[in-house]
Length: 297
Length: 320
Ligand SMILES: [Zn+2]
Image 1 (tube, rainbow over the protein chains, first blue to last red):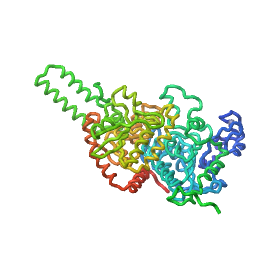
Image 2: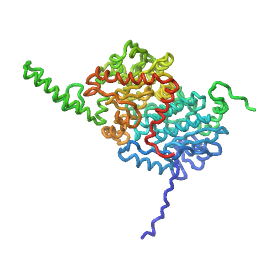
Image 3: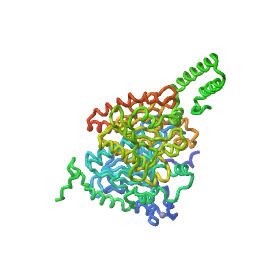
Image 4: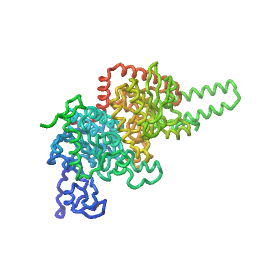
């Protein structure tokens, strides 16, 4: 008696969109109901109030890299659950679910491509993968990406979107902060550009390592950016935090960000920054970072 | 319970109470012998307990108010200590100390968190070891001073966490830690790190990048405090005992995972039972570390420090 049953299509592992399903979406910024197709044309920024919807890593790369094209690197790196961590459910199950939901092995995509004609190495974090948390695979991929950028003398750009270090890999996760920062020290000394883009949210061990180490630290508007989570701080001080605390605008005012850039202006802003940085860094003789680049012919 | 005994030390506490009661009686050969017997039993139970500490028990030991502080180790092992203050930017953070000292006849720089020990006024003054941005900036300023004059750095780690307060965020706690991680990776002088108490997440790591990482037998080092982990993953902070087990935060765990280089033994009953003995046990590993690292030429040392952190995590990664 199965005549009324619908045939279920197997759910295809798709790179998860943070956009809710359906044709229409209510903007959390201005409460207006928006037609989703319209949002696609504005890079998922509300055309009325400029609320920035969270977007998946693949979409991020598509908006920043020329022709929406890139080559992915180190995509097969995966965690073996070295601590055999179990809380209310095994970490292995959480990993499997995240892989299924995002089509990724872990919470960052490393890409090479061009930004306004300049070769770059770009990393985009995927919040849909266990909150974009940094464990050993994210740390390893970012380190390899920084090393690739150093070797090729191409600018390195990281788009952060992460709740911080991944608890289920314990102190191994913690040490990724030092590991990635050590690779960035080498980029810094070699004069290779590193630009950090902070999106909603960027917190914990990600903020307290690579996300704050950009030659430029650029945030999207109204992104939550901080070290301790707002709830932890509220417990410490035993009072409510003021409106806007730990948002991009707060950090800019306190001197922690270089600029806040609307997603629709991000690519053109990056192109100008790379031009300033002579990116072009590849044209600079190695071992002599102070020498000016040769004039173009 | 007698002061300074931990929950799991209850069998010891009972005996200590008996000793206390007996001590009030007039001295007789029988009484003295009974006290002596009890003391022997206390010691043997203590040795047995500390040989089989569970992770959560180690957390309690690592947080013990009588655990030696950086200044205790300085007074036992170092000479000519001159504390230096301030980040030259905003303030002096008393939760992290820095100072010039002499170790085995050589000038060195000492940096370390200080929780305030067992004294309430000092605990408050030092914010219970929760450092603010200026503490991390002071630490790095001091380390750059060591670099300028070619002196080795010895770091003592003991903090619950970086201070999770409004002013920390306002003044860029994340930037302060991040910048330390990057600059310590590239510091040209030897750095030896001693995790002797609580290695509290980014707040610990923010001064703990180095060439050799020593960790005390009962110290802990974790990505998050067990209570915080339990509150998030179990949605119940009372599950901290399970969280402590799951996080693999003990010295043997970290050694096995390739995150530390060597375990520093503690006296029977833990470092808090005998600070002088704890310091004496640190002396040889510390001297050896400084000698080994100091003997390397700077380029080799820089490359090894990079590779040391570079390999962290490889144990748990598969694929290409
Ligand atoms: Zn809106």
